Image 1 (tube, rainbow, N blue to C red):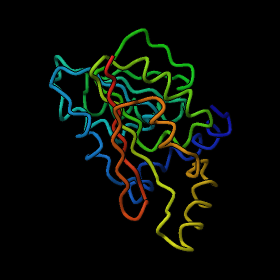
Image 2 (cartoon, rainbow, N blue to C red; image 1 turned 90 degrees about the vertical axis):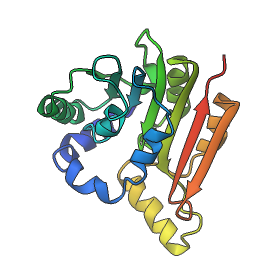
Image 3 (cartoon, rainbow, N blue to C red; image 1 turned 45 degrees about the horizontal axis):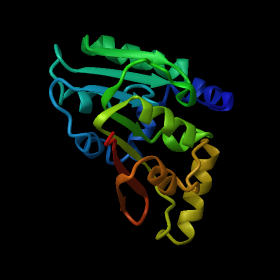
Image 4 (tube, helix red, strand yellow; image 1 turned 90 degrees about the horizontal axis):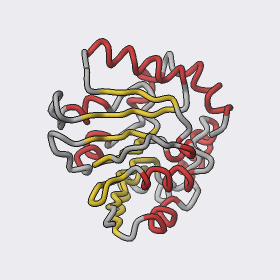
Length: 203
C-alpha cells in the first residue's frame, strides 16, 4: 500500500465522516449481501473510520458475532476506535495492517471491501490475501466505484476527481475477481457509478 495514501488520510480522517456520505452509496445493501448469521465472524478490509460497522453489527449477536476491521491508516483507525468506544461495541477488534500482506491466522464467514479496493495499488494481492481468510462457503463482497461508462463527459470528470483522491477506477477489477472466485455475481448500478460483486469460496 502506498504511503501517499497514509499521508492523504492523515488529513482527511478529520473530515471523512462529514464529506464521504454523499458519494459512498449502497453500503447497507452490500452488507446484506454477506448473508450473515448472528454468530458470524466478519472482516472488513479498509474499514476507515468505521462508517460501515453499524450495518454489520446490526446483523450480529453481540456475544457470539465478531467484527474485525483492518486499515492501513493509523489516523482513520483512531477515528474508528473512538466510534467503537462511543457505541460500546465490545465485539469489534481493530487492526492496523497492509491488506496485501494480511495474515490474521483465522478465517471469516464474511469479508467486506467497501470503497477500499480501488485505493489499493496491488489490489489483486489484497484479494488473494482476503480469500485466504475466507471460510469455505463464506462470502466476500466488494462494493466500489464503477468506471462511469454511461456518464458521458461527466464520467471522465468523475474518474479524474477520484484519481486525485487516490481512487483508481479503470483497472479490470471484475476480471480480477473472476480469477479469484469461480462463483461470482457482479451488479453494476446507476449507469456504472458503482459495482457490487459477491464471491463465494467453495473449497
